[in-house]
Image (cartoon, rainbow, N blue to C red; front, side, top):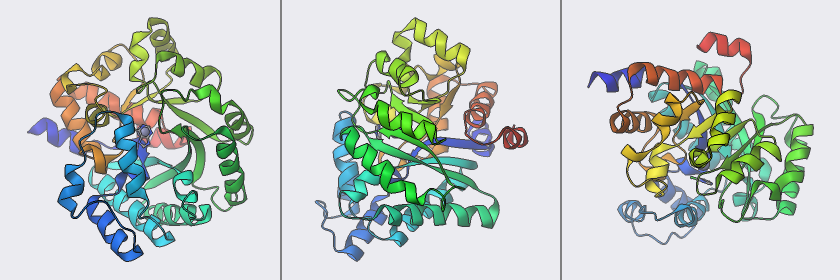
Length: 330
Ligand code: ES4
Ligand code: ZN
C-alpha cells in the first residue's frame, strides 16, 4: 500500500507520549524478574490479554501496576531507549515525552533516578544521530494539588542539570472530577518559572475543562481535546488561536472514547482548520506507535496525502522547539 509507505516516510514529531505507557509486556516481565516485583500475570500473553479496557480508569489501574517494575536509573534508561528506537523506525525525529514522577516517588523511587535515566537516553540519542527530545513532567490529577506542589519542589534542584531536556509541565490521569482549576497554583508557579504548559482535557471530561485549562492554567496545547467539538464557540477559539490538540486515535478507540475509528472527529477538526496532531499516548497498551496511529486513522477516515502532510507539519508547528528549528523541519 503506497499510502502506507508514504506515511512511514513522513518526518513527524510526537507530542503526546507517556514514557511509562511505552513499557512493553516483555520488558515488564524482564524488569519484574530482575527487580523481584511480583506481577498479577503468569505470562506476556496473559498481560496482553488483560489490555481490554472499558474506560480511562480501567486502563490507569493496569498502567500504574505495570510501572511498579521500574526501579533503577538503568530501568528508566532502557525504557526510554526502547521507545526512541521504535520512534526512529517510524520517522519520528522529535519527541516531547510525558513522565509521571509521582507514580515512582510514591513507591520510594527518588525523583532524581527518574530524571537521570530518561534524560540519559534522550541525550545519547541526540549525540548519536541527532534525535531530538524533551521531557514534560506531568502531575497526576487524581492526587492533591499539595502533592503536585511537593513534586515540583522536589524537582526544582534538578532544573539546572536538566535544562537542556526538561521543558514543561503537564497534567494527566483520571480527568472526570479532577478539573484543571484544582491545579491553578502549581501551574501559576511553573509558568512563572518559565516552563511550557500543557494539560490533558476533553478526553473523557467536558468542554468546560478545555476552557479552564486554557483560561485558568493558561496551557499552550491541549492533550486529546476531542470533546471540544461539543462546543462550537470553543471550536472557533481553537481554530483562530491555533491552540494545538494532541489527538491519540488508537488510545481513544481502546479507551472507548470512540466506538469505531470511522466515527473519530479528527478529520472533521483537521478539515475545519484546527491544529490537530496524531500521537500514540501509551503505545504498548493501545496497540501501536506513531505509524500505526497514522495508518489506522488514514484508512478509517480516508485522509489524503495533503492532509497527512498537514498533520505532520502541525506536529512541528505545535512543538516547543525554537522557530529556527521549525524552519529546518518544515
Ligand atoms: C493517560 Cl490516555 C491517558 N489519559 C490520561 N492520563 C494518562 N496517563 C497515561 N495515559
Ligand atoms: Zn495521554
